[in-house]
Image 1 (cartoon, helix red, strand yellow):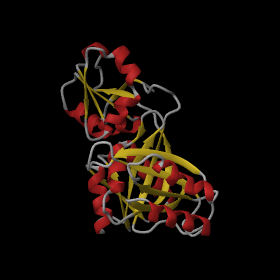
Image 2 (spheres, one colour):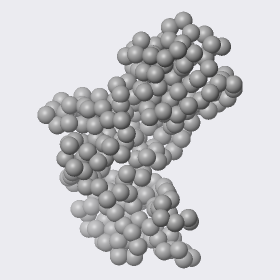
Image 3 (cartoon, one colour):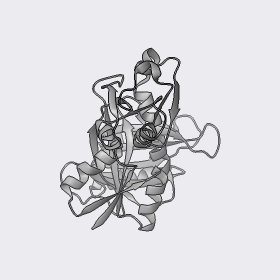
Length: 274
């Protein structure tokens, strides 16, 4: 039985994404971890066979904790990605009224997805970020009745909470993309994406020259994100998703040239969507 890590405890959206994967891979057993970094290290060391990490949300953008572990010197590749529809609810102990809430807890991404609701309905309430939405639900269930959580209907059921307000995210169409990491990426078959990270020299046109490599080989860039390198102010790492697989000759040539022409390069994997 393969072990699959997810950001826990039970009831988080990462748990739901893991359940989606397990439904298609019944030889897999989900295991809760407290942090994204701990999961990435566990896959790298062989403690886990796979882990599922949130990478971007349609409302709040990239999940920085995941982006940062992708750049670390850890031994794993992206094997799959999947998209999960996200419905955020305000969870409270049964019988709690809105005017009794003094604190709202959730993951920073969930809080960001519900800014308008919180500004309108909880202007004087303390908003506090915690490790995951399910940690928030667990805290609301075990704490004073004045604590609310932003989380899923599954979390409400698990922790015996009442849904005080449904679908409080800023936009009804809200989704999160997850990546599944493992020791090996996906073999060449069907619709495939490839992801890499690189940096560029601090010189005029350096990013343009790096990205133009993919234009020369006719490869479509589907996503680009930047994150601070954490080495010095003004230095960034660029994360790109590409259409195609590492086994294709054009992709091989383009990635080889990118690696040769940039000061930092890391291949993240070729993978399919599930």
